[in-house]
Length: 80
Image 1 (cartoon, one colour):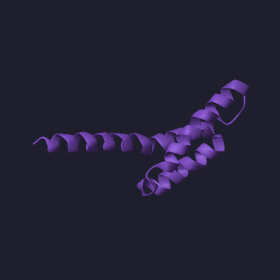
Image 2: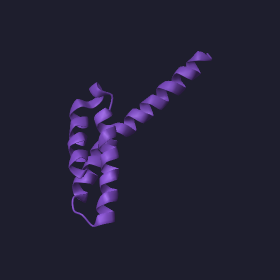
Image 3: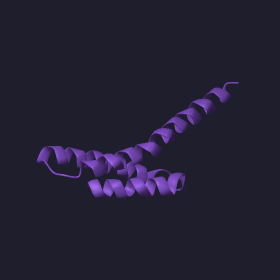
Image 4: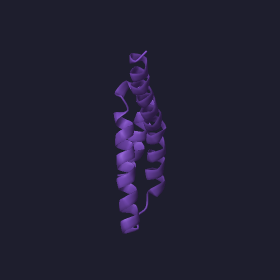
């Protein structure tokens, strides 16, 4: 799961918004699952999982902020 998180994080950064952030969302999910498994079973690979999480969140957080701004901006402009 840590390797998958890293790979999808890299793909998310490369593909950017062309894939609507799907790769980044998968990277975040896989990264959290990998960290949970690593802690539960004392496995290795937490660096790859954390790197995948960071790369995934680099695209997910701005996408959420832009989506919220678009929704509230459209709502405010509808009342003017």
